[in-house]
Image 1 (tube, rainbow, N blue to C red):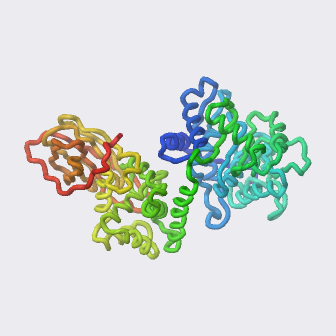
Image 2 (cartoon, rainbow, N blue to C red; image 1 turned 180 degrees about the vertical axis):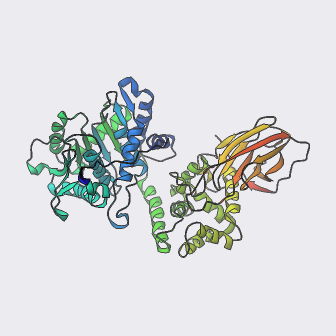
Image 3 (cartoon, rainbow, N blue to C red; image 1 turned 30 degrees about the vertical axis):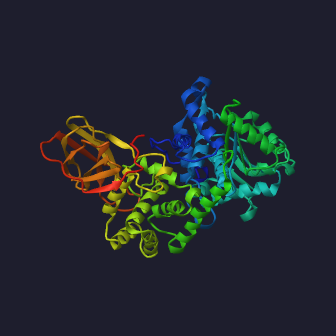
Length: 558
């Protein structure tokens, strides 16, 4: 068997996580902002998880993860700074790919036969479509698969096909498995000899008849004056058990066009006004009455800040700094037009995760750390971070900046975790959430257990009244702090690893476990387990050492 005969395989994903459902839950809950039709698509996914089996539908999580993994493990991006990088799908792209390949009928075949994706120009839908084509060519177990990049004109069809050719050129796996016809910019066919399959462009002006597509990618649907191309392709899918028509487009303006027909149909199917279990739509749009200029101003501030950042350091190892700073800039400069305060909820809901965690959204949500630093040391400290980033890298960037300010990473992060509990931010009214609880202690004695990552915090509600001794068992980097809300303030009582805390008289109280260990490198995070033994005490409780404003406090879990 030659290298060209070897079947490309994506690394098997064994993660217990389901990014498809996680995205849908985040959108439906409002943690991730999306337009009405995307919200409907997410609600449909969640509803079908509940009762889809009644209609013979099931969600194969492993199949969804395998397809998502194919993009990362096999495909490579092209162009500019992305040249040769693995195709790491964005969260919305994971949702689309995961739904398309994860949803099946009870006989095991793919549920969705037609997919309509309508997003803004430059959002990444063309490489997404090219990747779908590549998956259909080499990873879909379809004999003699015909994959087409289709458009009304041959030159437009070639735009999408060239993305696929670039993926073949950049990917060692695909380069070994596929054979091109043509050279350079004139490549017009990619053949997969093991499956007897091919990938090529096709257009209405080819005059070609008889295509039998396994996957047909239709580009720029808003430019199609008639439905000729789509109908030509759909007519050829009848002999395929799980053929896929994958349409991508910008938003069109002609309500008599085929594009508007698919838009309207997809919106109604997503909303449940029409039932079509074979049609999937992901349609980006604004809510009725939404001011697009407000969103544009917020986005402009965010993206402009990225340009400023790259002037300091375009390859900073402390990746957290890029999105957290841009989000902070929004909150600090855009007033009512800002669109970033809401990101804080992501971090509030998982405070036990480490600073610099690679979990999705936390780099945006941790803008509150920069605000915490600015509150204590002035906004100039954020600029200083970037000035140091120009000559330093990774954790050292933060260490040096905080040393200059007379503090340290563990101290600054401890203060930040306390500030998060109190919601002591000017933007707090725009943050719809409070820190999550790790659990609650018993009313009289006992023990609680938990785990927390580097520079993360776990908040245990105190239910017992009277003086209680808290004894912490775990690695040396862990410590405890009592936090009690009273008279519009959070009273802060350091407990170390063994201390007495009295919650009597507090409206709400927690013992916070903080992990003061600093990760060796950004994102290098691991769980640290601990145990707190709780017993009544005759000793006088330690007095509060400091206070934090709690005018915006919200009960955790609410």
